[in-house]
Image 1 (cartoon, rainbow, N blue to C red):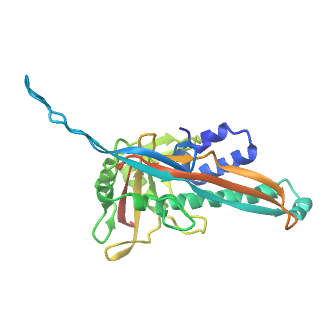
Image 2: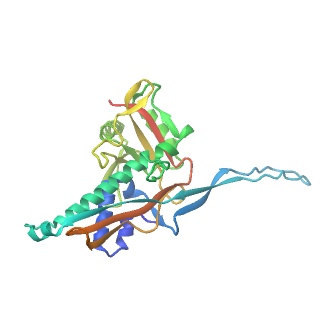
Image 3: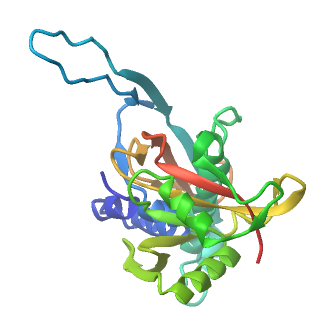
Length: 299
């Protein structure tokens, strides 16, 4: 089980590796989320629903039989990608040191990374074309905490409750920039601001050892986790998410790593085409692999 950056090290194709680097750099989730390769278009696994009963017994007494409950779960792959055409005349006329076709291919990859990130939160498997379900559809019950009936300012107690709602220690706290500034200031005042390093060698600030994952705009320029959520009578709130990534909790699936294919010159116009495509999804194995704190007002 490897992150997409680690998968890229196994891929000698510089075009695809460059796309992977853009995906990870522009997407804090993809920089940390591990993936496994699967055959076919779906991944089936079993989730523990309840454990069987056990008891002490005396001599010559019998146990009462009980069996745990296992629920089969299935996650399907989705298809994300796009084509990028570049006129052969522009290549012939280009000046300077920049590879202009590579720049446009990079923009396509960046758009795909941000689209995937938006879907990670707001995806809906009922949508057409098909998306994977995001956290806002997966998290229910005790995994959704509320700052206040009509929204409220963030308090450390809320952040601690969010972290404790995740089984084990979370891998990341995902939030927008204003909330990161607020949490950073609060953590610094208590001496709880910590520094870790991610898979790309970048330093990450965090609270009590859990790094911050900064979520900004999607491919359209709209804030993914902006202060535009409704909580009671307030429609200017946002959310913070705590996630735990791993083989037994929350990971990605793919048929193979992200692929960027040079299709050469197309038949219908004098342009070179690059196709960026990825068959992927996410697997939410444990019901406490993530939690959401919603209804947070800006400080």
